[in-house]
Image (cartoon, rainbow, N blue to C red; front, side, top):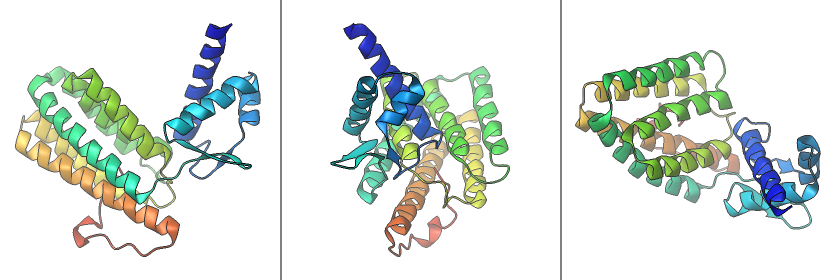
Length: 233
């Protein structure tokens, strides 16, 4: 009985995360666990336990007498997530250059092309997920499972807590160009350029997220002049 309940809780947890990742639930939205349990065809208990787990991970917020809400990004959290992301991705890109074969890099090129194709029209959550896959593939090529898992967690939080309404097509195009430069640096085994480009990519992405967080709060945020064309992730 306990095993079945645990399985149901895990299924509810994964499904709610998928709902958030795919914008079925968006940042700030009220999530009614009763409706979630009905949609998943299970009792309220595993759905409520799944929601509590998401609260503990900082993806969902519980407000007494009001219920559960998808958490929104704060400026401090954006700073911390992107600092951690930079540390992880610099490590990954160095290891990927050392360990990856030309054949393995073909997959990375396919993901880059998929990212380009995802930008036909408005930027959507799908665009962010394809972008994520490019970065996670580099992490996979690095060959460190623990680092890969950490980066998965970081990127999930970045995507789940981000609204897409302020992301314009120009941001996506800028991100694509940066990815292309990064891939060429990896292909040519140029560590110095790859590290420089991934750092710049992540730092400019952080500035765009901070700009969006400030906009949501009604403040005037003025990023540095060299970040005006920064990518969305």
